[in-house]
Image 1: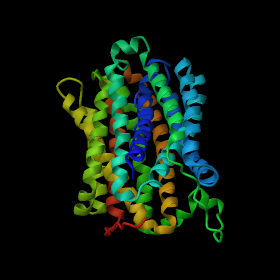
Image 2: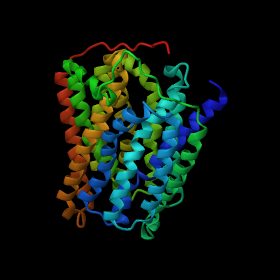
Image 3: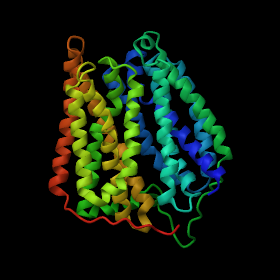
Image 4: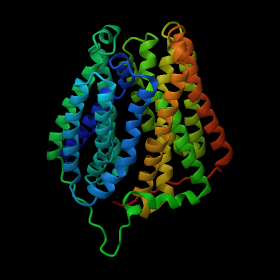
Length: 415
């Protein structure tokens, strides 16, 4: 792989996740401070990510993979996304904001698969090369968070003047840049299907992999993956809002610690995966979810602020130990024929169904304790965080009891 291609792929990843991190982390805080949204309205807005994830396989499987170059579709989607982001920047009413964010997520979620497609087609040894490209995405997310805090958009003063709306303008500019840049990315035409192989509708959108659920262990993992996304949704929907409201300074910048942790444990995971095995790795990840939310429930921005920072830092274990390990497990279970379909299915189940349920549950819990918020802010957040801690612990017990230990071997295939 040439230096030029490596730079293009790395810059593409940087912008892809810079765009997402530039507005999504502070979205909950923006909705409350700028649009005065209710807990259910916040849940509906965050649910657009899940709706986008559910629709994404149709866009990728029925359009991108069959008819058009991936880099061109990526460019068109991001240019359209920039326009929608600019409309979100100008919106002052939640009823007007919702259609724009829904349309944006329907366009954005497929780009997560497209940037991977563009990358993998250029790599001669994906197992070794992809992580060094993908890490620039994590860097992009971190830089976005640090920029928001550095500019003071998430500060008390910024909240007074509604400065968080500027995150959408920043994301719009980055989206336009990536949209235009995509047209000079390496050409990634559709892969021609075998003439003798008839593609069914189910194979196009990844449903062929559903036969993996006949495997008892994989079924337990699949259900656990959906359930663990409920507490994950609590983090996405409430974490920034929580940190800002309890008085943590530079909250968005501090949340970038989670992405630093994610990058660190991503590099460490292969060693730990071999040392502990799949089941123990997943269990450690689940217990990290429980610990994180307990730390949030009982920490504060004063003498116990270290508990909040530690809770953020656990993100790497929470995400990598469960989701990345799960992707590896899914890959080994699927076999060569169903690898792509299986990854699509687990993504649909987690980011689609699991988080969709999670955002609704988080909205219900927020609304349930809303009256407490005005008189007992600490109590409101304590009640809010105990719920996902409990859910994560129940999922941990289900997986611990029902999943039978098995040896998972990863195999490197010749590309």
